Image (cartoon, rainbow, N blue to C red; front, side, top):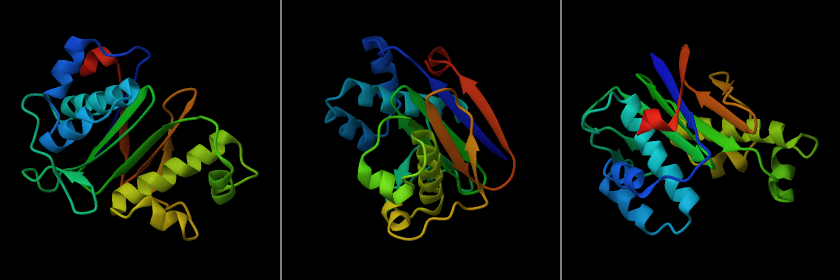
Amino acid sequence: MTSLWCVRWTRPLTMEEETYLKALLPPHRRERLERTKDRRKRDQVLCAYGLLHLAAGGGTMPLIAVEAGGKPYFPERSGFHFSLSHTEGAVMIGLSDHPIGVDIEKIRPLGPRIRQKLGEELTDKEIFQRWTALEACAKRTGKGVGEFLHGDFKEPASCCPIQVGEGYCASVDCEGAVTVHHCTLEDVL
């Protein structure tokens, strides 16, 4: 069974919300967060782990470890896979009993290098849809996005777009049917 959890928000987190969510972070991620100066990026990370906590059932957050390639996993829950992605104002989490990759991106202006690689003739939305598919596949397989960018990218049959609202593109790469849960920031807190 595969479930996706999405949340979008438009306001900065309060200090109380930040403190609550920071307590959910694994130590290695908390250390990285402390070095992040951009408030919006900090809020993204905090909301991602808050949504992961909600999606995983609440209670005590399961221990999170990181594979050599950077892919996070729950070492105490074998056979339980997750993927998380965040962008300005939105977070998506994927949970599955099979390997999974998710990506969400806010549509924004792109530089010529990315446009050239992913399709100069495409609109920004089409490029971001292609990018999220690429990223979701990279996360599912554990390979870096760079490996896909330097080869001929063909969207895998297991990857599909997810509708998350105006101004965003998202994709999931997984096996089987997907259930999507749209949440509010208050649900995460």
